[in-house]
Image 1 (tube, chains in turn blue, yellow):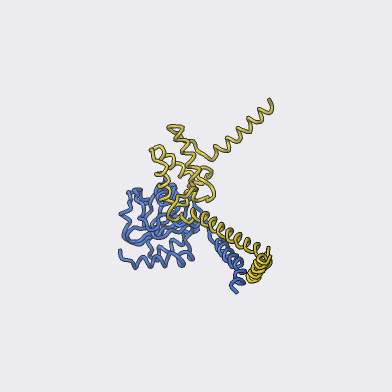
Image 2 (cartoon, each protein chain N blue to C red; image 1 turned 90 degrees about the vertical axis):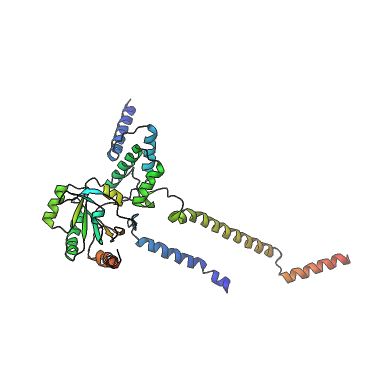
Amino acid sequence: MPARLKLFLPLVVFFGLALLLFRGLQLDPRELPSALIDQPFPAFSLPSLASGETLNVEALRGEVALYNIWATWCYTCRVEHPYLLKLAQQGVPIYGVNYKDEPEAARRWLAELGDPYRDNIVDQKGTLGLDLGVTGAPETYLVDKRGVIRYRHVGEVNERVWKGTLEPLYDELLREDS
Amino acid sequence: MRAALIAGLIALLLSVSAAAVIETYQFDTPEQEARYHQLAAELRCPKCQNQNIADSNAPIAQDLREQLHRQLQRGASDDEIKDFMVARYGEFVLYRPRFGGDTLLLWLAPAVLLLLALIVLWRVVISQRNADNRADSGLSEEEQARLDALVAEEERSA
């Protein structure tokens, strides 16, 4: 009997392989884990978009917040914008990183479309973006009370992403001790 | 003469298309330039995933080339530059992944699979050979024993 069963081995191997490859088909190869997960938010010293004052990483620490990488040249950011406004209304702290953009254009955009951000870091040269491992806009980082990056979302934040992924994590981080 | 002219024109066209992607950087030494080209070929563009940063004209690849150039000018070693990139973009950014940690499976899987295949092959060959031996006489062990006994008796009486 065992010899008989052995005949089925190639079939079993085949199905195992087929399952593995089928799973692979459904994965998005662009969805990379950030190298900065569980790392502190990188240090920076950059001007604020609204006030022009210099911002640094310590000044923004202390609460669970979203850091949204955006730019006026980024079309998806415009699509994402209304949802960020909605989140801000719900009381979710969102900081903007205005990535490789013209500050003047960015100010106009916020005046026109509304401003969901607590504050905006002007990253005109993309140096903070580089330290964050940003590959493009929009990207959104979830940072905990200690200033540690806990999650990165590449692409638009919308209802599905917020309800499905970000909000459960956000609520969990809120319950954590600082 | 005409062939030379055409060849010259083609060379000119090719050089223009190459210059469209790559900015020009100043290097202190030819050796530094060689390192730049080697590293740019080995670093993978995080956005356009099947290109290295030398071939890609995505903004992020431009930034990384600029960063690479700056680090080389500063006198950073190859390992320092790779560490810098990996700290930001993960192991993914290296086209030639380093040995150890997360990449252990990647490096060892081929050797393990080859070993496995050799073991299977060896076992198949052995069992095949045993089957061949048996097929030669066409006798079971019992019959073989009887045959041996008969032959021995025959020899004694002869």
